[in-house]
Image 1 (cartoon, helix red, strand yellow):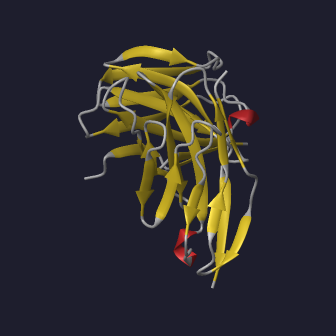
Image 2 (cartoon, each protein chain N blue to C red):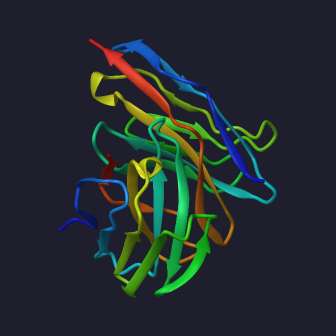
Length: 112
Length: 113
C-alpha cells in the first residue's frame, strides 16, 4: 500500500541552523505531496505542497522539491527559529482521492 | 470565524461510557474526515464523508459511529469506551473528494480512565 517514511526525531538545532527533514514515499499512482506542521497543543496546518514531479513547494522560508526519481520530498529551511519548534508531518494523497496518508512525524526542537 | 471547530477540546471519561465529539466547518466544503492521533503522534484516517455520505471507513471498530446531519457537520460517537481509545481526534475538511488541501480542527483530547 501507499506509505510515507520520515526520519525519526527529535531533531535538535540551534537557532539559525540549517534544517533538513527527510521524507520518502511509496505510492501506486502519482501522488500529491504535503508537509503539515503541528505546533504544541494545536491542530495540523498545511505548510506547503507539490502536486507533480519537480514542483517546489515553499512557505515561511521552508521549501521541499518533489523528486520522482528518488521518491522524496525533503523539507528544508536555511535558518530555523525557536518558533519553528513543532512536529512536522510529510503526507501524500493520490490523484482524485483526498485521504491523506501521513508519515509518523518528526519533532523539531530549536534552542536559542 | 474558526474554519474547522471541534467540541469539546478535552474529554476525560471512564471505561465503558459513551461519548460524542462534534465537528463543524464553515468553509463550504463537501468532504469531511476524522483522524486519530495516538500517543506517539501517529495520525491515521478513520472516516471520510462526502455530502453526508460515508466514503471511507478504515477498519475502525463499530463502537465508533460517525454521523453527518449536513455537509457542514460530522460528529463522532463512541460507545463502550476502552483505554486504547485515549488519543487526540482531529476533524478535517476539504473542498471535495479530489480537493487536496485539508483543513484541520484543533483536536479533541480524549482520556479514558
